[in-house]
Amino acid sequence: MGYIDEVYRKRVPITLFVKKKSVQTDILFFDEKNKLIRIQQDLLPGLAHGTDLDVGFALDRTWWTFRTKFALVNEKPHILVPKGIQHHERRRNLRCSFTAREQVKVTVLEGLGSGNGVFGMAVDISTGGISLTIEKAMYLANEREIPPNENLFKPGTKLAMVKINKVPGCQLMELSGIAKRVWRDGRWRLAIEFAKLSKKDYTALLRFIEPRTLEFKPVRRSKKRREEMDERRAVPRAESSATTKNSSDDASPASERTAKTAEEAPPQPTTAPQKSEEAPPASDAVNRPTLLVFGDDVLREVPFLDAPNSPFAVAVCNTPIRAVKVITEDKPALILCGTEFKGRAIVEVLEKINNMGVLKERKVVICGNDIPSKDLIKLKMMKIETVIPLPISGPGEFLSALNS
Image 1 (cartoon, rainbow, N blue to C red):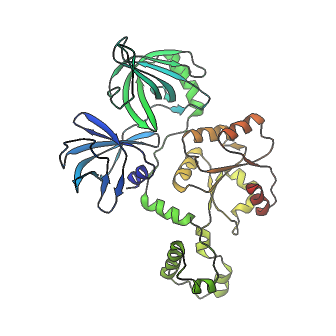
Image 2 (cartoon, one colour; image 1 turned 180 degrees about the horizontal axis):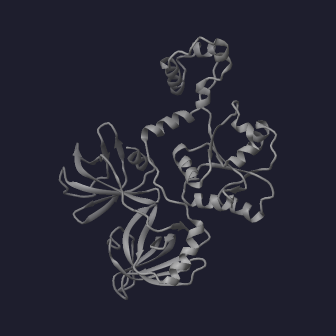
Image 3 (spheres, one colour; image 1 turned 180 degrees about the vertical axis):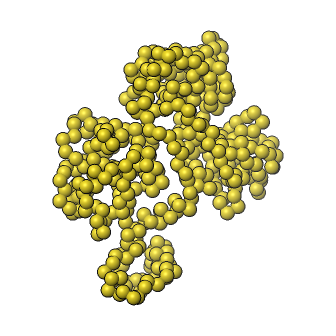
């Protein structure tokens, strides 16, 4: 349910496969109660109720599939929510993405003067293959431009030439390949598997990829967990008891939910009234916005952020993989970094995480001194512009610098 819910919320297109045909659609409505997924009309005319379908979608920079059935409900097309999904792209090879400045051009020809051809820009690469955005497609026999579509190259189509010009640190590469799939992810994309890679090209690619690669781990989804995290991050408004009593009719839905939760909660123990009065309320701690800190070293510079009266709920990550998982699942309100992380410049680490697309709409703050101007430019390109010099005396100074 968690995966389907995220595909629906993010408007990720899904691909339907039936009888050697494939079409793409968006999920128009997700009926969780009746376990139905509403799809677009007239995609597969004449398809009978109960027909088996294979469905695929791209998420976490990989490919997921499930088998389901087509259903007509009130003469509108639906597919049934599956019992489970499968991860079909087992990454045997290290892979890395290209930055915005690395304009790596790729030309793909199905045959010499026959079949289809495309021109595009590389998105990511491994020693086993490459994926690219399709900028232009044409029919090679008459060089007539054609619109990209999912049938441009059937899976398994042999490609006579894949020309890559050029990966930093590598020479121009011309090799043959096999088309794996064509899909739309905002733009049309093509995934290619290398048929044969020379030892020289393999060594050069590996030298380029290894220092830029983060280990791939699929992120587990849970719709219930997402709803719980959304509720945790919601900060209730502070209201006086008199105002609460006199304004029950004007209370917001969020206030009503908070009051209901408080009524249903078990009573607090009364054996030690003085201590319970002095302790902060549990809901206060739960509702603090999450602060993700990259490493214990940073937290030692700002220990007041992890104090009991801190305005944040602190989560510390000591590996990039763990950081990516927390960012994806918990969606912290603030990410705090030093100038280094695990012995590497923080700019390099943030570039790799940013290329995975998980830093969008997240506020990142750097704490440190003497950051090189070229690193500041790279940070600005990633829309990271808040740099707070050390030392910081207390939470007041930190919040002031944060809002300046």
